[in-house]
Length: 177
Image (tube, rainbow, N blue to C red; front, side):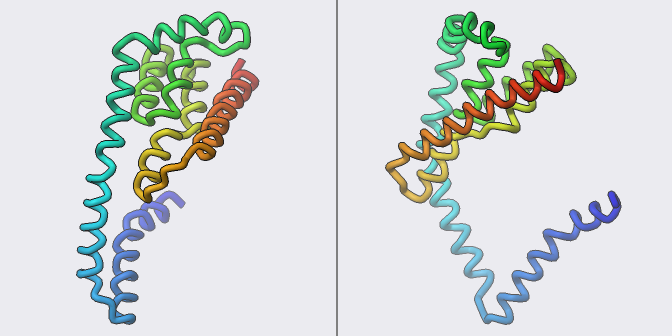
């Protein structure tokens, strides 16, 4: 089974490209010219997204390096302890909706310090997989298509992230404590 999956994974991209070229030939579409035009559009879109991404990355860097994130976690730590959420996981819960890279960095730190099979390692991994980068998604995808009103999408995304965080804590606590 593994050998079959390896062979499929090696051949899937070349076969897909050949299939697309074959369909283009059959339909008499100038495939190379269409590809170049698509590449130009992709490049323009990437450049237009840079200010949004740069602003978000700067905000995250300021939040982490200023100590504001640590101060906030110290402030809410007594509440987290009362409801059974380890304070060590709070930075991940806060950063995950904002940035996948920052959240992955926090998850890596937790796993390095506590180990992958520890409660915190399992909780961080589960939380990483159960939530999404809501602000990143809204910035990139909504910015790409020019959607300005994103209030409801932001609310629903943050509610989904909150539920993902809470359910992660419940499931990991139930399974591994």
